[in-house]
Image 1 (cartoon, rainbow, N blue to C red):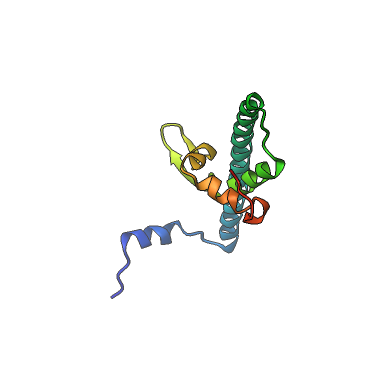
Image 2 (cartoon, rainbow, N blue to C red):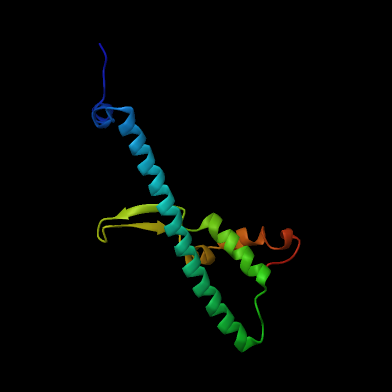
Length: 126
């Protein structure tokens, strides 16, 4: 006797019948990954540019200025730690990507990662 669980049976029933169907599914998954990367990159760029603009406005009042190397380090770090996960929000009927740039700044993750990319770690980032 062979026992097949209900979940396995559902997977078998939903499996593509032909190799062409399988290839089409794989291609669709790859296209979705590309779309997700574009959405993620856009979210990071928008949020980071807004935050950097706010910092610049604040720094103008203090007479200080953020170095271009620091901005680059933040960009690299944001691409490594921000918006890595997504979930489907049924109330909005859309996917939500987390964690945001602001959240990773508040919990210190973004700044820790940025330190690793700022002048090769020998300089102090903040």
